[in-house]
Image 1: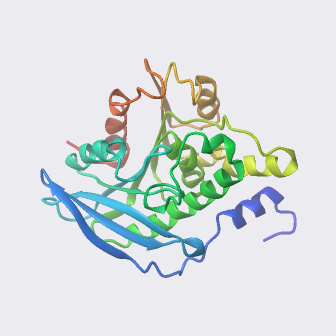
Image 2: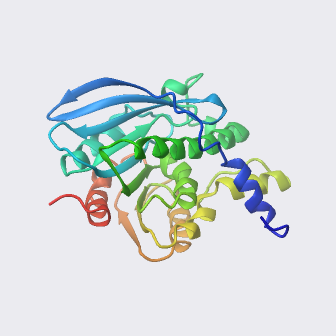
Image 3: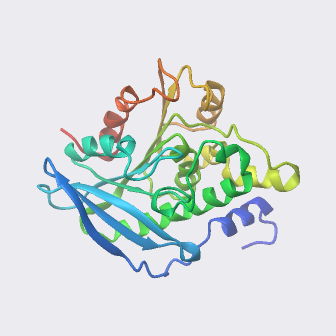
Length: 278
């Protein structure tokens, strides 16, 4: 590495670096089956000894490698929420495999109840969890890519709200992701760290910083015209920083009533870009 490497690039390599040969110490167990769809719980080791809990959703009837869709849940929810499992089951029925994890500080990994207040009141905790979640997604993809039912050449990502905000650095940095849909998420609307350190923190976590790094991959942005949390301005700023191929879908909704209509454009996008469905 040359001495003139940009300091922010070096900081990013440190912030998201991990030992690639770290053992997964994977544990798996059946977590239910209905309508020809099985759910398997898995748990792997990530950076700093963090145990990452996830769910793998797939058809019990289809064999052979299939495209993988990673699904990021919104803030305050978790991997078991219908918000992520309901669309995941629809995509599985069309021929994909879906996986979702408890993001740092959520679900089985939460040390205390998670509220929306946390995202404004505790900016450094938010930073720590965001950085950890990006590495957790990378480790999850490392693990799932070794599974025989996964076609590692066809991997997509769908992030809802916080799932999209934390997922943007993951997609930007990991070129194994071939297509991504960011739903009710955009460039950062949060602040609170301040000073030079705060500016560096924003460079590490602002989705807008990572949008240009997604060049060459198909990116979809699905947004609510009346979103009062991730504002239309934040969504537009994120979209404007993307390169082609890209698409922006505006829906007549806000943040909290995004479902169920919000996923209608996502399925066809995934099927087209990852090659599954009819």
